[in-house]
Image (tube, rainbow, N blue to C red):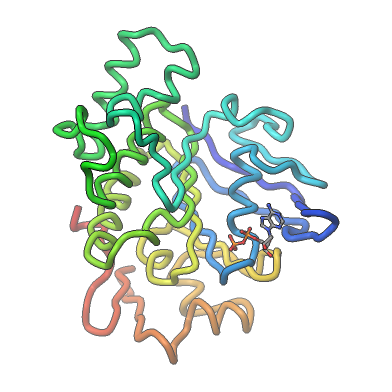
Length: 265
Ligand code: ADP
């Protein structure tokens, strides 16, 4: 199933305090979109509006051509991965991955096949019988990705999935996510991060947020070379902070190192 995501004038308020304001954004089918902005800019709130964990005070959310604004999370066709893995500690890896399918009352044979497929896709087949506490942080995050993929979502929502990992695991996981994006051309990905390098490396397009509003949106190359706002220039360009360059061919470089992991698998 090929789907995209569309925010149509979405606002969200907590206790009268508007934290997402008239947010409009389209993620094309199969596109990897990063929501990039500083802490508190409303990125997670936007993601949670797609997941169905917060209710907009105004506007509509569409997945594909379905208006999902009033649907519960389990009927939206999404998979979600959050920062702290959130695996069930008392369940083995396979049971964790099967969880969403069981909740949907999928037939037992289908559950087994999909769990195997998702573990294979994330390189975690050998760990099916382990408990989360027996895995490294990076492995646990792979299981969390497998759990999200097991329901074969049209939309994968990722909320700072690398931020709990140490630097080495983070770069491995970055490459894994780039590979999954290549291998799942029909799955739209919405990826929340405050890290410019992650966004520049992974995303087809980046939506820059500040103060609950969309500031800018474009390809990494466009935003870096021709930022549409002063905020984008200071945040994405960050030329004084990060020696990031974008080559004509599209590769992203940090200093002399090519960061574009798309070819590295
Ligand atoms: P980001 O993901 O960019 O860090 P968030 O969407 O998490 O931003 O938060 C945006 C704003 O909304 C912040 O000021 C935050 O404190 C506030 N906020 C987030 N969740 C809640 C909540 N459940 N109740 C009240 N305020 C919240």
